[in-house]
Image: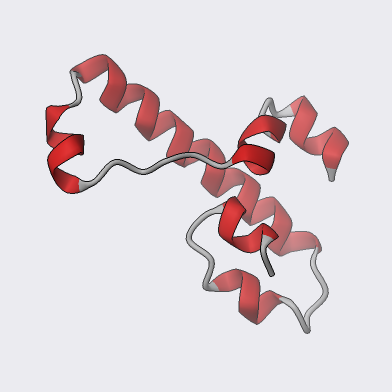
Length: 75
């Protein structure tokens, strides 16, 4: 999986995860930061999809309830 994550420029995100701001923090973000957060969430979901495609069927139910790649990596 690492070569795929590298080619999609998401390896660091998969390894380190990201911090989702609380609702009040999210409201305080400027337009540029909201755009960056949206892109980060999109990339994280892409990585989570890729993980879901390659895991064994016995593990998939646990992965499918994960909200982020960081959550999935703890399984």
